[in-house]
Figure 1 (cartoon, rainbow, N blue to C red):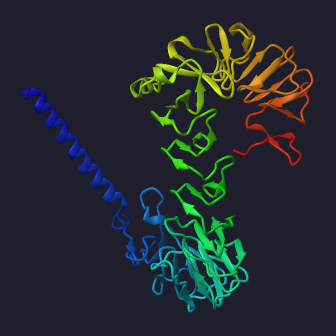
Figure 2 (cartoon, helix red, strand yellow):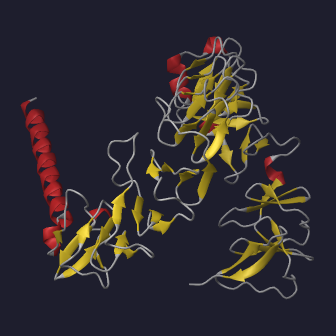
Figure 3 (cartoon, rainbow, N blue to C red):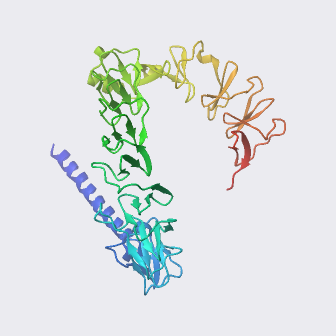
Length: 437
């Protein structure tokens, strides 16, 4: 026992020593002094330094991985930082180390916010009678009435701005939405998310967490309406599951036939209600709710022990992994039946799945249909089909790239070359292209 204790102490000491060495090394390689650089004002910005009487820009102060770049033409004697990203000297205003066209270093002012006490580093700046966002001019913005709001929102007497390109005619003074992140803002009865109007029901709008919100009529996920979800009874059960008064959801996908009143999450993969067991949101046909406890569910989640095979879009079976044989990454066999990623293939036996390229196992033939990674190749002739190289194939009539027919290639003259691929045109057709090294 004493030997084990001493071994444990030795490992602990080794761990502590390694941690200290790593911390010291990280401090050394990240320290500006290691690179003979001195910050202009480290309390305001960690991105601007003087080195060898030159002004150096270092993104986020990351000397070790990114390194510094000289700001050509910057005057080290008059250079000063404005905030994390903006700086100026006698000649220019700079944003992230680059001169800001149209700005005047003798005319620089912060854009204040009545909602956020610390308006510095908002990205907005007024100079030379113009409004700038992230170093670019906001066309037609009025500097006299311009103010910063929150997040990336700002306003003047005419518009609400989100970054540079999005502007919304302003009717009233916007307001912060309580408990919402800074992607949201209220504009009268409108709710904006990432600069887009998502709801006209601001009075009933309520954020639930950083992803979800709702009003009297809709549920929103990252600012988008979730089709089918209703606000009544909506609850986020876990990171993977939600429910409303009608049904439960796996992420934002309805769980077919689920009962929200009895729905229970057992782990990230397995859930159940009074009627069914569910695996990643699909009904498990060969397991009953009465058979599965939480500990049973934890066993079923072990991928090296259990596999889920789709019977169709809604139904799966859970079977021992050792009993499943992979034909390719897209087709499997169990009990002499064949399954794809989405369904059981009716009437298909393992010997019917012919792998056409043994190295990647990307191309297969089943009956009279040819597939690329499980996706049918329209128009491919199984009798004359051959694999060429690097996603290319052909038959007697056509050349294909992945599952797409190549319009400007003929099988009798087609020659594969390194770095050759196909791109989609405006009409949805695919044509050859040589990539650059």
